[in-house]
Image 1 (spheres, rainbow over the protein chains, first blue to last red):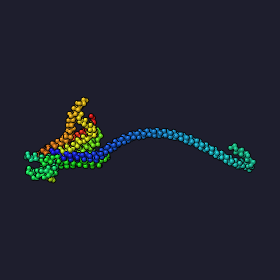
Image 2: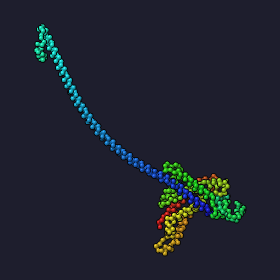
Image 3: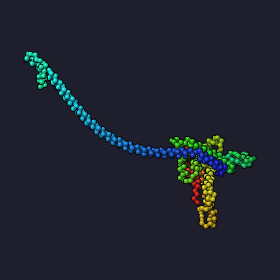
Length: 156
Length: 295
């Protein structure tokens, strides 16, 4: 157990090693550790924030969904009302149109009947004259008896 | 057998020493015959234990210093590689290991030392890893490396640097120098002297106070000086004793050695880690005491 220069050599080596460790080993490792700690903390904070945001978004979407449903219900009601109105209106229109058509048809029928009556009237005069001619076997002056015949026709 | 056993043990406990032999020194061979008389002071490798001790202070334990520096370099290179590759992303295996060590040391320092000091944490890391590696050499079977170096022509080879009191003293005295430095820096010369002379006994009476100064100085001086000595001798004693027991076990017949060496080696894993940890913790405690300006 001799005490000698080894002690001083060891002290010098110790000094150099500590300085090296202090300058080139400790700081980079500590920096990496602290940076990772910060990253993890940031990540956790971000996930918290994201969870909160998600909750908010869900709430908002539920709210909007509710509103949209209400709106849709309102629209449907309105549409139903409107449809009923339209149906009513078109029923009215159809009824009126039908009435009009019926009236038109009636007028046409009336007109035709009148025409037919006129034609019949004209022809009946001729037939009557012809019949009278046959009966009298004489010629009847048409112009002389025309007035009388027309009266007869009017009576028809 | 007794002679050869004690020779074996002494051979194992002898450092490879390079030092200065004075002029007129008689060099002896193994049988005690004078083979050479030096006509001037010579730096040379000691060939026997008596030569090594005759070299006095001007000698180097080449083996202790070589292994210590080599192991220190192993520590620094491994940690430097990890530090260079250090990423704040996903760490690899080496970085994981290094980070565990660094965080462990950092935690120990933070628990004990509350001031601001950039030296203490890296100092503690260096102490822990370096002392651990030096202690670890104790687990290499006692004859492996000495035999290997014997074949390479080295007469002595002690591979566990911490079984050399010079190594442990070199470290503890460095720590002691730091204690003095930080005491002076934090408390000032007056504060440091006051701490040494005015405690633990103090009085309001000025005369009595002056009278108590020598007593206090003696007590505090002893406790101050005991720090480096106890730090060095605790580590040295534990490792020296452990090494000695390994050497004694190696004296047993080959077939019986494992029954003792295996349990002792397993137990020794605990001791070497614990001693490295204790050296580190006490360094932290001493330095934090040096920083406390409580008086």
